[in-house]
Length: 188
Image (cartoon, rainbow, N blue to C red; front, side, top):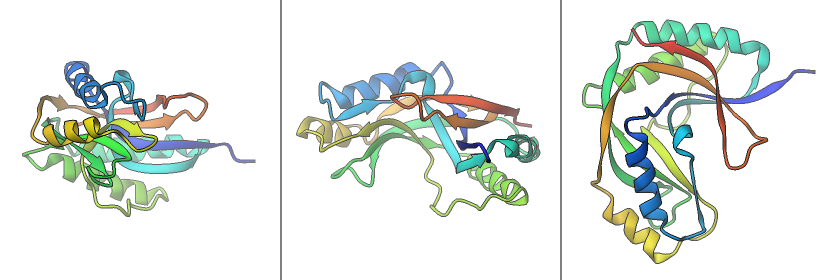
């Protein structure tokens, strides 16, 4: 019987910007229990969701990531603006936008998609929308949350240089969500 892991490829948010993102999430949440905040140490940018992944594929995925990351030098991103999926009027997930003026993030995401296809994983079907999920909404939020989201649409949350990509396990035994790094590869 195959042991399956729930995985995704992502970039962890660095310690320098975590406090600003966590403060923004808390400000949106206020005292509304409908929102469950992501722990600051678990904030990340998802590049590719893989889902059910056989444990024996981890090594091949790591090699594919290493190949894709080698062609991309570290680059800078800014975290700017708050939003929600599917939209601000009916939020299920609240996020901070990721702005990459150089275009390197989109190129990295595409290169990873090509490398993963070589080891048997399909490219993402959804359009890539760079973001960091800050909170999940478990029932209809109050008016204060919706107002805070609208007010945060242009919020500047800082920036950082991204230099590594990870294969990350979403640990289903933990509540709230908890993520464990399985593989880390350096850019460049």
